[in-house]
Length: 420
Image (cartoon, rainbow, N blue to C red; front, side, top):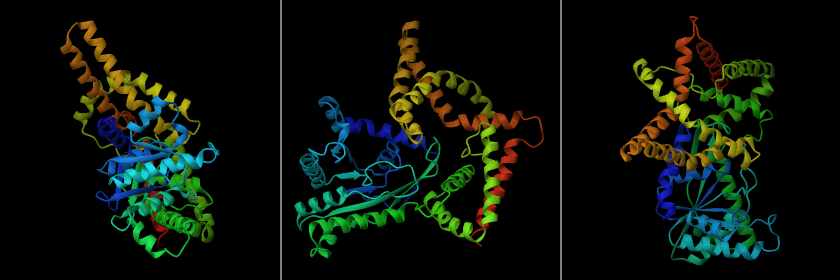
């Protein structure tokens, strides 16, 4: 019940976090399914899977989160199932994981979908870490329980972020063809169980490498990150996985055959990003600011009130994210998680204060409605609104934003010429 109540809100929060969510392939909906995805972000990966699969999902998470009976019950209500890593508790791992695998198999036998991140830990990189064998073990064990009468499928899912650090980036989800575990078992029946686990794990890894960005051949990953931000500033929906994969293939060749050209390009790109930072504009922020002047004028009081109203929960969310993790790449996603619970409480507090001070329930309800409206428009239009004001109020004929756009377009034209 708790999962069903929270899922629409969580999905909506996840969609608001991203500028664009690009989906390639088809999520399998009506079969017993083990979803195997790469793990880039500890929070957002799960939100994205919830957003694209219509069906309910169970998630396999590390057992160290299950501390205390009450908290463990709560995580169970949220459809999280623990598995235990050897480094967390070497003595109990095998017994506890036998129990965990049995619970997962029961979920799958009910026709449910279970999601697992076989890399084991989140890794903020455009490379795939070596996979653990848990996914393959669960799949083969479950298919053995099914027998010939039922079939389990594994669907690899590649998640590619255009920017690991920022709110309002874009993301691509690539859904691979489901792997029939029954057909796999038949084709490899002569192998031992351990060899079957190894081969199936390699098959899942091979599929994930095709569905993600393999930047292992790139020596200068910061250059790839800067190029990704450059494309983000166009604001155009793009398939990040295809684009970044193409660039990762081109860069090593260009660095080998045209090193000076790449050096000049990198210097120009660095100047572009430094100018954006000097103007307090995120390097990946959309630079186009064509907006209706009347609409923007009407937004002024709404956004101004929204900034004041949201300042406290916004700052608390970011402060809390820094207390939870030391990884700067995870600040945004943890801040989103905290804000998901904090903002509704803050709106409730403000509307309650309006109700108590006025003595009218109607005033309290109207205050809640006003808070929700201001919060929505502020979160959705603040960046575009600030960019619009910056452009309109600039005294010269050519604004710094126009200069940034020209620099960006020239740089993108240079990148496109690499394919010639």
